[in-house]
Image: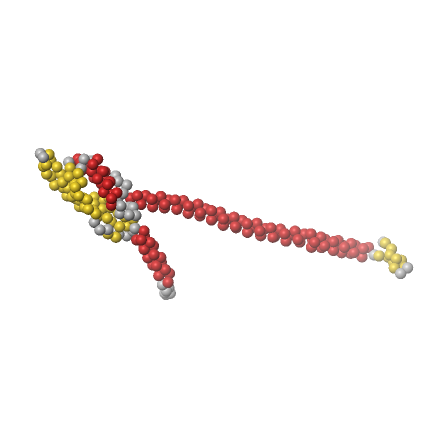
Length: 214
């Protein structure tokens, strides 16, 4: 037991009070450490955890955007390649002089005489224009076969249809004279744009239709 001097008097301090005092002092010290040191650390940890989660979400969003961008680039490249192929097979202009030149060259290579070439008016289709033209030719049987095969191999689509042939003898040589109505095609941007606008209009009308609940 310890002694305490109080107003010139010596009093005794009981042990249980000393223990209570020490416990209280420890609690106060621990509380001070907790609120001054640990609580700010916990708050900082929660803040960092929130920032980490936001960063992870942002990273996921950017990764998804990157993947979509790569897919969009690949899709754009594929569509561009397809369009280039289509434009070779169906140019955006009639380009009749070039078509006539190609037909004439094929006729010369097949030793066939192209006697007549006449384009007809354009006919509108879904996303393209159809350009019919009449063709008259004369030559040997095999020469005509070579000529048609050359037409088939052109990059530009040319469909030979409605043809007729007639056998004749010219200068003691058998000859075949033929007539056909062929078709080639022209890509139409206006028709494609019109179709796209009509699809958007139809989709908009479908969305605006009232829903009838049963």
